[in-house]
Image (cartoon, rainbow, N blue to C red; front, side, top):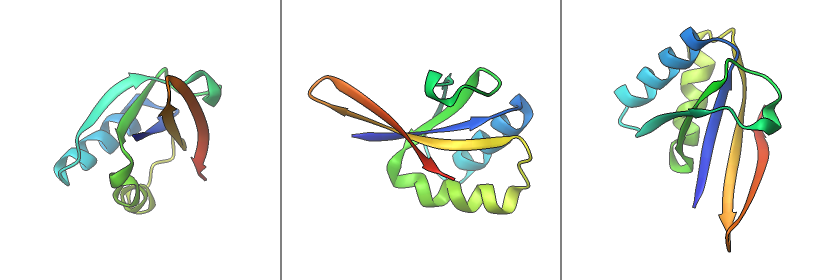
Length: 87
């Protein structure tokens, strides 16, 4: 299963993004920002990969100045790999 983690520089943008995803039916949780990001407010939004295109639409129309990037996290046989998916 692949999860996405959206990283923001501001908590205001983070929670606005989370609310928009939830409003559109996505299940979202607040998590610690992955160390691979090396930035952010310390918290990020975690959601299922199937909502990736929804997240991109929200980001493109939401004016999120504090947005940093989306990372995808994949678990295979107990190993975790993280890579930047957008931008």
